[in-house]
Length: 172
Image (tube, rainbow, N blue to C red):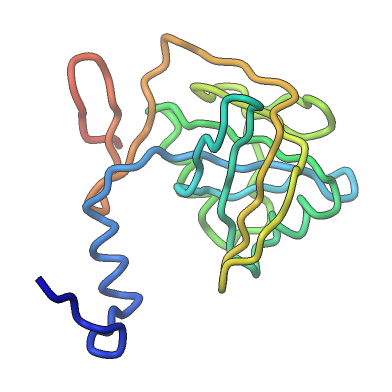
């Protein structure tokens, strides 16, 4: 089977977005601080890169205010959202400057960690790699905690779901 050359096929950003809607993914909020003020945004591009040594990766838009704050702090947290945190996923993906208003959080290693997250990890920046309009930020975990009883929030097909032992349920 001969595959078409890259010049024969063009995938638009809209087509890629539609394709990615078929990939169920967890949701997390990346948090950090800049000048002592909390910053954060919702992400779905977060992976474990290595267990030995532990290394994580998040992908952030090059224009992200959270990315700029991470560059200042050299630390960030990844907060895996629980099913009950749908509104946080929405508000932290909005353009609002004050995303932390009324959001319960505590400080670990100088960065805010969301109180009710399924799991949270604080990472020291290991390396940063530009990738077109995004930046890959690798982090070395320095602290983590998990709530094994919390059901995670996931997204698929443009909709939010809570993943529980009984199966997925539509969130919100």
